[in-house]
Amino acid sequence: METIVFLFSFSALGVLYAMNSIPELQEPYVILEVGIAVLVLVFLFYFLITHGNPPKDVLFFVFAVFCFTCVIDLTSALQQDGVVSGFLEFYEKTGEPYLGSAYGIMMCYWDGIVHFVMYLMMISRITDRKTYRTMGLFWAGSLCANMSVFITGIVSGKYGSEIRPAFWINFVFLLMPVWGTITLFARAKDRPLIGGYNAHHVQTMKLIWRPQDLVLVLLLLSAMAFTILRGLVALNSPLEACSVYLKQYEPYLNDPVGYPKVMMLHFLFYGLPLLGSFVYGLLKPGCTWMPDWTMFFSGALIQCQWAHIGASLHPRTSAPFRIPGDTLWCVLTTNVLYALIPILVALRVHSNPYFFLKIAPFPGQTGLPNSEEKDTKYKDK
Image (cartoon, rainbow, N blue to C red; front, side, top):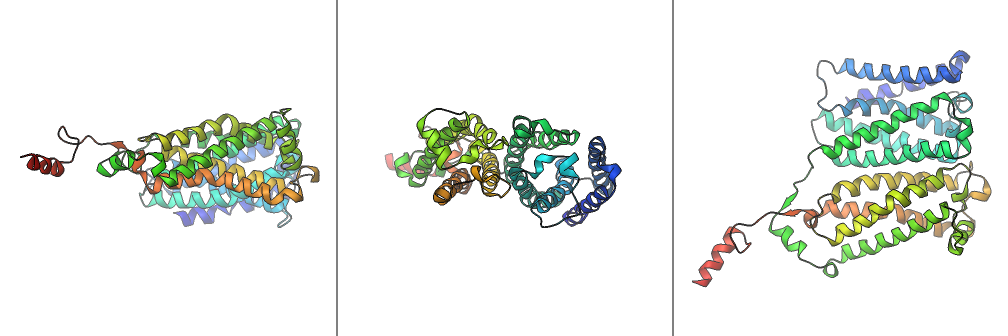
């Protein structure tokens, strides 16, 4: 099935070429109508071809339809960068002009490549009746953050006065991952929540005897400080540290497109509490929510940082707002590390989950497994 989805998705190129060649299809409201009609037709196509053997997971249709739009996004990014032509010349004028911004281009690359690969992998697992919950949470975090920053940045930045009817299609790509997130969180976890003796042993160890967790706690605290600093910069704080950082390190945070400020405020109001909760989860044993939320947040942060770093370097960003040359490597290193910290936490949680499991009650009064309890009684005699 993933092969069919892969091949059919590239029929989007034919739709784009036709719209680019027919002036009557380039009117703002016509673009909206055609966009909605195409989404409905793509859904009906997959519904009909799977009618005899319908997928057990309704998210299959979401992933299949979004594969189609991924090809459109990748084509948009490639055309904006001058790699291809003849597909979307009209769209920047009468469709969605903000896709021509540096942030829009980097966002489309992520959707057209990373999300596209993830959709095909999840469709494959659905077809094979295998679980994909962990990957699904990463996707949900990525797309929720993507669209939340994108939509808010459009209406609050310089493109707020250039909104066309096609703008409203974006809410489909916001509501679907929100619904998918709720669905995935409600499903049974891939791993059990209850641990036995090994979990009990690990959870009695103090942080000082868990050097990996100690390093992650320190990294998370550093990420929290970095989040606060950039959040204050986005809020135009008069603090000297904020002024220095904005001028010498990341002037892109002041770009009038609006996306960087919106992103930093998302990190401040949503990311900061999650980073703090991960510190708590590494200190307090038995936090069974850690595997899900670390994976969800990893997807969100890596997508945002990709778009943020790429846009601050892209030629479409005005020179005064790009990263200064003398601090380039410092800024890049800091931003890459900031993106990797939640991923490192997620990998640690999933690779050795004993610390994050509930402890199963042991038989007897001593709290020992049956064999150890019998040995103890024998020694007492």
